Image 1 (cartoon, rainbow, N blue to C red):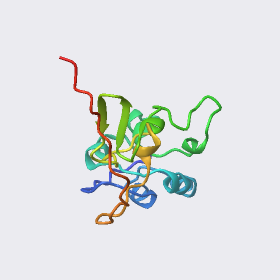
Image 2: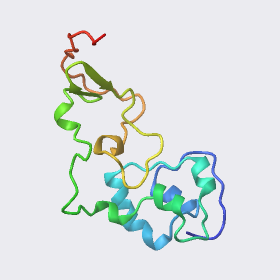
Image 3: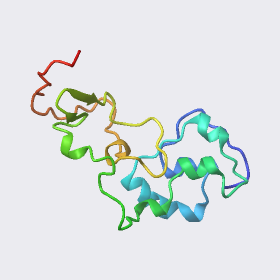
Image 4: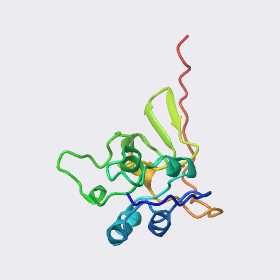
Length: 147
């Protein structure tokens, strides 16, 4: 990316912060703002310190910094690559099998990698303190686990 090593003590969450830290080029900022409108950005101080700004092909930067290509959907891509949506009765619960449920206690990832692994994990997180709408009560598996 760019030469110069601007250290940060906070997670970078927007394109202007990435630019100020020297992680992206100024000419790329407008297109990356579009990516930031679709996917959350979060680069922790530890990850920021590992990025080699002098290497335009730095593998850590390639994994954690937004890319305009993230807005391109290829014909072989699925909208729900993990296939969890049909098995999610409410947000934060995946109920794929009758006697198992996967609980997702947090719906926001601390660090987003490129490309995101699932639409739910890459959605911009709600503002702190903002309450989520309540859904219907859950029906938990009633069949006992096998011995």
